[in-house]
Length: 178
Image (cartoon, rainbow, N blue to C red; front, side):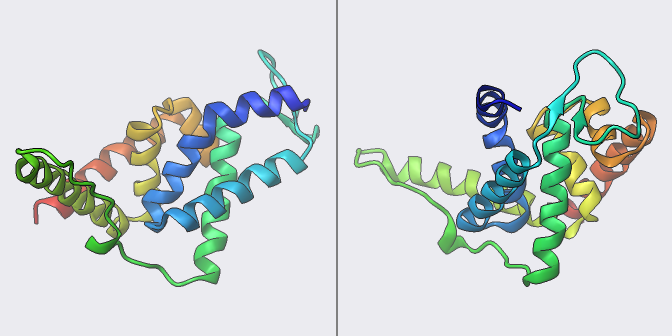
């Protein structure tokens, strides 16, 4: 992989990988560290990309879809992280809310607080879900991954991923509306 290929893949996926981690660990610093570790490992793998053709099983370091491969690496990195560390919960002190200095700042602050509160509820509900369900929801709705890409990450059939997403959404609704 050339420096240009790596830069392109990095720029296209850095925000998505960071968001994946942030939703799972609720710490900006930890999410940044995990994201950096994933891209470092990705760069060190010396992977070559094959476009438009199938990769034979015995050929190492050949990847059809770099984004799916990155998310697979991120998922593995997250599993390793949880094996080593205790899980931390998001608190209201960690919310980054700036109150603008205007005459309607009270209204803007309350709107931001309401949005932040709703996001916190969604994040907490995602954390209570089966990790596989949380991953699928994040990949599909936040990162706009296709069912094909998610199936590549999970090594499952596309139909299975669709069913898992339906179950994940039902579980999320149940968490949000007990």
